[in-house]
Length: 74
Length: 153
Image (cartoon, rainbow over all chains, first blue to last red):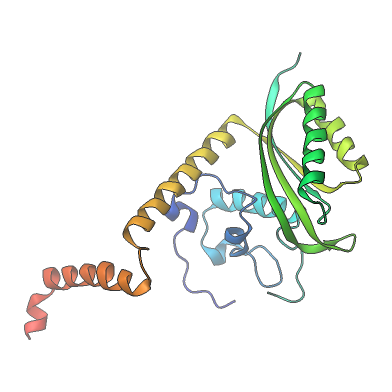
């Protein structure tokens, strides 16, 4: 997980007000290869959006749009 | 009668369902909602998708997304209905507060505009056109405006 320096929240940058749990492509960028949620100290996401993001990811997992764990990263 | 609340209800049906069986399932679902004093406002068939993990040996599922108004006490019976259903093997009901609804609409609207802008400005033709048109113009502007003296040195 070679991430660069901490930068501004991507959601704030893009003007996102609501993180949709059905948008698995966008959400998957905030997961590690293993399927863990990337902490905000790494991704730079602000607290507000990280909260929305984690809820969305968890809902997405229930719908099998995202993995709970992934042994063979895609 | 109790107050109607907004829900987003997504459920996953057997992947081998054809249109007819999906129709019949959606019909039964709507009927159940209405019988319980609710109303189906939107049905979106997301179609057959690959599951991120196997569910009871299934690799695929037929996704159906709905927006629904429902009295709160009807949610439990609905979930039971899903559980008993042989067609649906996974479901998710999400309560949407007015705030959620508003923010979601706002975000979608924002992205639609964003996409329109990109499609209009950036995307016509292949990437080449984009780079030549958009980026170079920007760079030249900056350099000419900001650092003419250094360049002369």
